[in-house]
Image: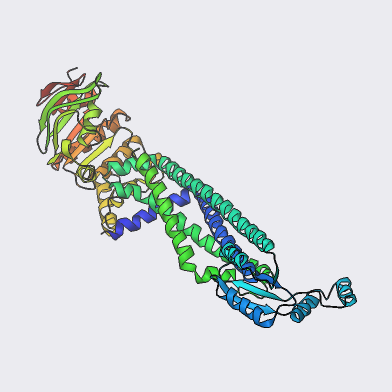
Length: 304
Length: 226
């Protein structure tokens, strides 16, 4: 017996949706835009996190040493730096190795190669290349390196790295903040749209509701179709968003592959491997928000 | 069956719809509740079906204490009280039969039962040949018959008829009153709310007369006195 009212509630709900097809369409479009903006925000966060991780992976600090530094002193300094907290790896780059790398990096620039040839000696210095464990704690590492006072250290210049990381972090934060604001705005719009959709649906069914009350329909049977409609809107919107967004990511992936050349980052895999965690939670949140808006509207207006 | 004891209804301290009304309607009675417009007849109906709450006094309808009834129980009360109105309250986009079926659907009756009961009540009210027509395709009297059929689907012990002939010509009005008498003859208590003097005087049944919210007359075989 309990199944019959439930099936009938959904039957009436489908009838409502079809009768108010334009209103239903607008509601679904707003929901789709909201969910799409939330997913876009997630995608931007995933991409920017991957980009930052990639850049941070490339970031290292160099301590430039005097050309006269003796190997045992260099090794002692390397050991000292290695023992510092937040140091992942310290690599010694000899004067000769530095020259080879420099030439390779500038092989397309004949003027620099020519200038090098005209010099009698290797102008580069040996160095210690230090990779941090966590690039976010760069400042601590730089402070620790600044405290090392060893005569074989010729120069230290860390400012470039600090500025670049600060810029990356700033861009990431701004993108996240903007995305968050857009999502909040869309969620508020969704709440208002669902609320008004239910309100209009109730008014268009004013006489029907009155007759339902007259013949002894329970409150939940009267309110049920409106709640069911909002649940249907949520599920339909989610299906549209999942399908549309995965297609969108599929189209985006080739461009991202070019950007993340040499790195294993696939935005489509990110979403498909976290399918339940992302879309499942979004569906639950959408159902909760829409049910809330419907409940408020129904309890306020269904006494017609 | 219906018992009112000292019932008053105030919409605000200055607007008194009903003032200290008491009466008792026994099972199977046919009672006319009469009075001029604005004397509280419709308020009385609203109080009896739990649509409005009394300000003072007590109402018992079919074993229910309306003064203490919860919102949850009101739908169950309404399934025991059939109500018809002057404006029929039929859904225009449904056929007469579908209107009757709708009353059973919204209360969760199985489809097999609905398909059995609805045509039966349509036959009782004499609409078996027109039950597939829409309200705008039949006369006012036939619409009211359909409304009566809808009110009968739960075999109510009480039928409240609030100005059921108000929108009908004299021939259709007579047919509706005859139908109410027929329903009453099956044992259903009928309360006819009307201000139609001719109908009340011809019925020769019990008459309760309201005037300015007060019960001024209760005659066993009464006439329209105001």
